[in-house]
Length: 373
Ligand code: AMP
Ligand code: TRP
Image 1: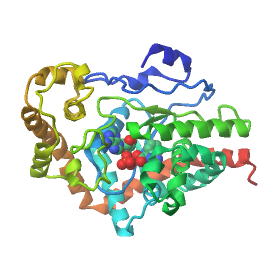
Image 2: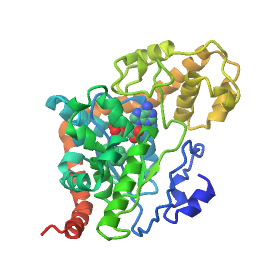
Image 3: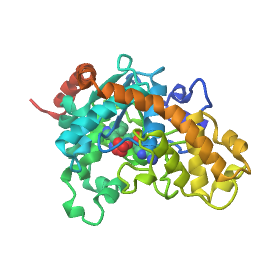
């Protein structure tokens, strides 16, 4: 974070980027400090979400959930299982129910504390749907058409994509702004959506002449694993929806599967480099070293020092060991929690009650501002 950007934005509080223990995460992406004036004076609040669609991956864990856990110490955090986002593409109802509980269990197993933070699923709090509708009327078609995720997910047949998939970023803005959240930890792929939330907040504040009513939320995209890449192709994001299971590590993979996937991971023929500059054209090396650094809570440079000149096989062996050591307690805990879905449901119900307490007065104001009687 450069200090120029910090001072240009009076709202930005640098404390959010400082973590104790491990190495200080280094920003890979500059925050977009647009010339928009931030006049919001309310409290800081963190909001983020993960979709219950398919298996959680190492990308979700390192790029998002691990970061959520770290932020709890210093911030009021709201973490959501975004089931309404998931149905923008078809979900079998029984699978959706299971995946919703599984994502909630993964949050908890990874260290999200449902007492300190608020943990709930989106569909339980109606403010999300209501505010999303209002934002559908604030956002412009042209803004939505620029969203790269929509272009990717809708593929060649845009006319067959659901209307919900197109409007998805307005729902995401509603998730964040129903709580007037100011900071949004996400992986790099979600940066564009958080920026759109800023645009929606700004346009609402302008159109309804209520400056500073909504904050302009900041994406928090930091650390070495903001974009974990596919194990089969270092130029593609690791994703739940990749047809090849070998491309990703799932949070539910057993030890042998993890070892096998790293063994088969794509590499290049050269020994590992010692300088960050040398990673430029070596995306597979960059990815595996980055995953190691993220798990070890080390800087990429120090991991590179450790493996400089070594063969990929040595990195893969050590990465397998480290991944299993870090993930297996989480996987075991998810299994334990999933044995008692009633307990998970209680946590989600309690979280939803606390979430409504924050969103309800904000929605009362929104209705008044918009002119609803
Ligand atoms: P999703 O699975 O799309 O709901 O993503 C949930 C969170 O995980 C978002 O913050 C994403 O940006 C993050 N995420 C997903 N895939 C990756 C990846 N390959 N690398 C880093 N972060 C990711
Ligand atoms: N769109 C995000 C994703 O696919 C998930 C999400 C929904 C989210 N609402 C959010 C993330 C609000 C941050 C804040 O990963």
